[in-house]
Image (tube, rainbow, N blue to C red; front, top):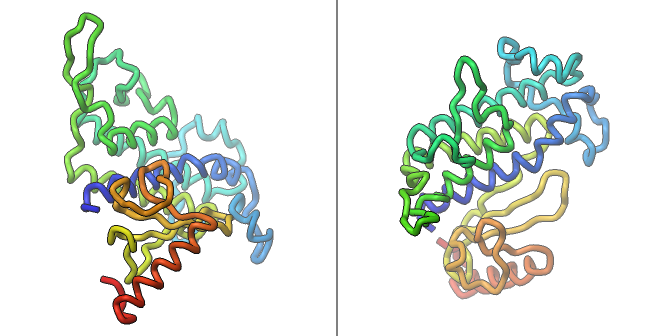
Amino acid sequence: MNTPVLARYETADALHTVRQSWARLLLAIECLPPAAGWPPRETRGFLHTGSGDEQLVVDERAPLILREHPAPLNVDALDARLAIERMLYDLADTLAAAVQHTDADDPRRWHFRSTTSPGSRAHGPHWASVWIEGRVLDEDTTPEQQLDGTRAAPPFGPLPEYLLHEARRTARSVEGRLLRALGLEQRRARIPDRVCPWCGGELTLHKDPGDDASAVTCATGPGCIAPVPLDRLGRRVWTLGDLVDLHTALAAARQSTGGRLAA
């Protein structure tokens, strides 16, 4: 898979993780940080305060945040929330300024903050994440049919590659900040020196936070002919029993190359 396509997949995957784990982060704000070794690992994600290497952000705790959390028990989790929201909103502003062409009354439009209105930030980080993902995947970038039969200009332009990589960097940073605040390890890693036996694509191991189940995806996407289903991002994915078949295929590929590592 070429670099831009892989960047789209990775960005969308990171944003999906943020949306899935956002409720955990909000709950962690209301919970005391755990003592060493407690609670058990499977519940630690709700409480852990993070790596301890990030400074507290105290100058941007708006009155709204103080009303929502009058006495936050986990200040690290609260600061992670504020940092993540700020990064998502700023990224949405940047992308909108570059590719947004839709009318002001279009519900898909990202509205900038002003001195009198929070704009689209009022809808929260979940909406910002969904909106960013749409731009990264180049949604709504083709002319649209109107009621009178004419075709209108697309509401958004394709995302330039330099902004795609900026979105990827920000999304991965946001994901890492959230997972560290929850005490969860990184959930994905490329499989070194192994490629997909069916298409030669890059393989990535995924592990959901707090879950022993794993999955492997091929970065080629729908073009891969492996006999497994596609995931939500269009990648071939091996889970559960399919992982045995993948292991067998990798072993056979390794044997056919005389034990040499795949390039």
